[in-house]
Image (cartoon, rainbow, N blue to C red; front, side):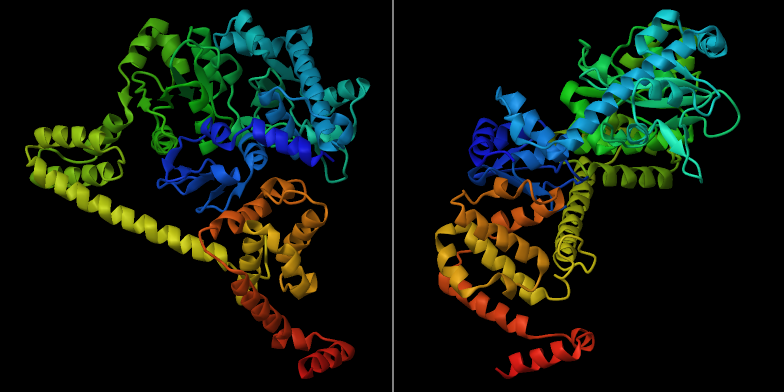
Length: 581
């Protein structure tokens, strides 16, 4: 277990405002900072950083904690990995001899296994037995240099070709399962996850092979098969070819729809292309792109599914503040086919002519309406006004209002008034939704963090007010504990927090968010943080807390009818004696 002194030094060296700013566009609001939450999709900022307490909390999704908790969630790391991440950032040395990091050791072994597997697949492809796989890739227009550059490979049509090779190298069944390189049959026996497939290694920005994608060469099974999430890989937080694209000199990234599109673009000289990994674009992937690029060009397929995915991607990128343009592929179904037919020079011209997201959206709306009729123009303008009402940037909104007014021959003021009215309705609707979500979170019967909260709302509220007071006034812990026993707490979660609070006091440790980090999950840390900062503006006095203690004791003495039915005769007798007393 790491010393408190080291954790405090680590936090001091990693100011939460500086760390979070690398992931979130923060704006100062009084003494705190706010921004769009990196852990859930939202249009109105509900994510808050509290520099005084070196903590963060999202009033929308309940995420919260200290800088270590933030890095755990943002980088998908375990506690010790987050500590090492921050230590490396600050140039500090982690006292490893104080840690028991079994999860970290498993991750290291999975990375070794993945690298060995990638070499094995590549060897298969370049062997005489793998000629059919190499012929397939050459037939798709790839050169040997491109195949080597991406480390492409081949999984033979065998049940244990990879497993046998990896076992000979000393990797265990547990490690093969953890890497998702093995699947299990009904009898529990392992077999190769990837069979008769072209293999695309997925490599992170540090050069680690973290997962694989496989393109089917036969007729059985899905066309593409991707690694499931593992200890070293989360598909919603990684991108194919980012390890190459991060070194591009271009300011924009190109977002393709699949492996072959991206490989074709790289082979044609566009090394700034990346792709998602068998899933629709996620907010985490959008934020990842925003780390490396100032703009993104969406180059999805031209079919209906591709256009639907494009609209969704535009919305996600707008939420992370990354400008987007949309590539319109004409004369081909995707970038791979376009480059083969017309060459890289024509593709470059296509990129340069790509429309920004607003122009793309308005063009799509225009295509859906008959602009030659008055009714069609009215319907188009109403749809466009609704779209522009969602703009937070008033300057951008104003520019397109002028364009629409000129294009449709309508009064600019009438159009602007319509948009402003729609914007006000949207803001009110979002505010009501946030308030509704907060109420649901506070007393949700499906509350996984404190499931007893919905059953005993008054007691839980008293407990949280008491804990909030102690976090703000640790000098009063001695007095409060004389009047409040751990057993008086009604909800188990709050009792555990109170117990840890008393332990911190007894051990003369600073009572801050970091103290709870190793013993509570990320979700629990969010709830604790809310108690730390959510009620910090309330000026509770010691007398207020005494009234909460009294109310809590009263609630503790009350038992529901269901609880009484489940009591044994002895428990019932003790309860009646207690009530009589």
